Image (cartoon, rainbow, N blue to C red; front, side):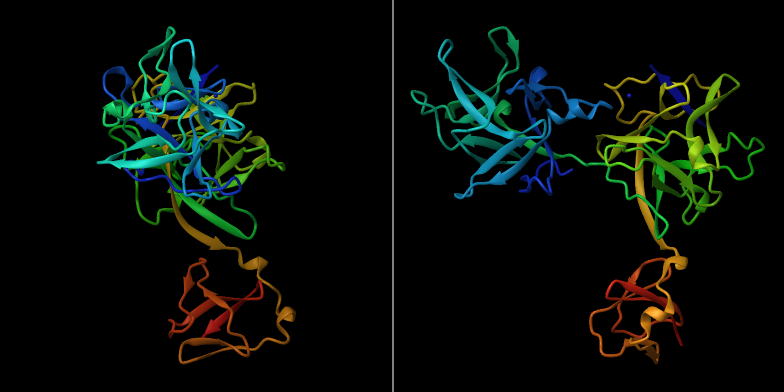
Length: 402
């Protein structure tokens, strides 16, 4: 069964890819570590870096302080940029009181960085050192500093191979669900990541005797339309990230509003977009996401997998991985709406025909051929008999291949 609980919001050992501000790729910088430092990630706290536990939060602004992308300077050295402060780059400064070389972010950095392979991990080395501390060049996850826990500092080569100087770059995945519209639909299977439910997914129980409570968790079945969902953007502005989830078999929409039955808060179904307030999606880790939305009373609710006769678990943002609140979106088929294909009078000067199963466009080399489900096929080979979509100059026509 599927319940909604109320709350009153890798590539582990790979070198990071270089990206740009317009096409960023974000990473956590995670220390191998030992004792309580193990697994901590670089975190920007008021432009000074500390090692902190990974944030699993519905608040993106909190998560941004732990996300980094990478550029290269003219000499091929790395520049580290934090998502929460994109105008600042990772840098160092000397604390004259303690003699420690702290790692910070700065608008006018004095150093770039080298990334050195260390077995399955990496060392991070400052290209330019600070005056009076020329041997301090390797980033180290510190233990304490002036009473502060876990500062990120530079150390000498003595510490270069220490576990607390070994790091990995853990890729962050933006949700980036493809929104469907009147011309194209992208279908997803929404699988539960709860232990014991790994092959189960949200299913519209078509035979349900309760029309407003018809969503459940069932074993995945290939090509079962009752397990396929499309996302439709709710709002009209870029800041409004809400979307609706619409079932392929029934057209039922999953609401954040709920009905109480047998002590459970079941998410309701509707056929009307306007009746639902929509959902938001936040990344946890390992391709896991949470789904949350506001009900008609303005309360934030989270989609949760709960077994029959089981007490629903409480939402805890620090233990979401593998919980009933964790979901995986598996992208499937993309379909096209034939009603929006270009009209024949757009094609008066284009001759399309088939010979022995192969489709030709007279006088044109640059065209694509797709099936009615949107799959691109090899236009230079003989194709099975049927109807295909031929696109020329951004215009599409349905053509029968004899």
